[in-house]
Image 1 (tube, helix red, strand yellow):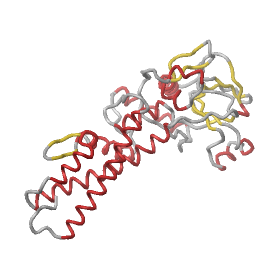
Image 2 (tube, rainbow, N blue to C red):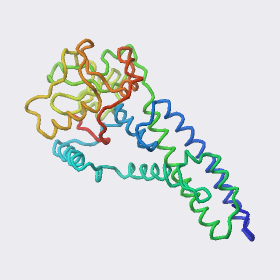
Image 3 (cartoon, one colour):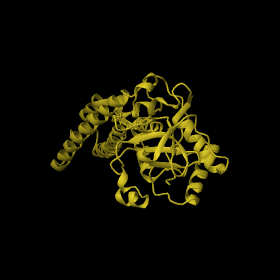
Length: 318
């Protein structure tokens, strides 16, 4: 690229720095693609969207948000219901996700090498070297290509940072013998009587001391906690010390509002297939079974997943 008459030494140095940065980021992006392939065939056209989809189906997104009041929850859930009816995610994506999708789209279809347009993965490091070795025809051509190079670097850096973070969250968790219940089990709260299906677990409570004090659970901090989709339509984070396993599938209460009923029904479809009466548990989708492995669900790990795809969402916390 610096084969242009009269090019300043400073521009030569910038070009070299850009090249080195693109090589490093490019290698990281290619490595991310290779790691993602280990989780099975891609189910979305672009990498980050595919990882997001797997993350949602594996329930590895952080659903413990700041939603406190039921009016906030019902407004949020209604927005998702409207989006599904209109077949659109408009207005649902947070700013960070919009930036991530912008980088995902760019890297999937907007990289340019010698007039060709394609994906960063398709061009690879060979295409990157070819782009830098091709002489610039003029200072204007040099500037255009440098600008494009910096844009590619920006999107590669964003894509790698978020992609590797999502991929780390998809890695299988190790189930300690201390964890009594498993994915798909239905639990009953001894005091309050709600029932909930297990859709995730932590060996110890992952919430801070303020949350533990607010929920009178400081004495339970070092014990297992479970993500529970409950029969009143809410998501809860419950201690192993306050729940028992019960038989039969989760049945929503008749008093649940239509909005929360739709929400909970969609969550069950997203995370589970059906109820297995032999195991006495809801059968998780392959992504959820891979994230929280246990022998009874090993048969699911190689199966294609046809669970309903819904956008990531925050869930009510009680």
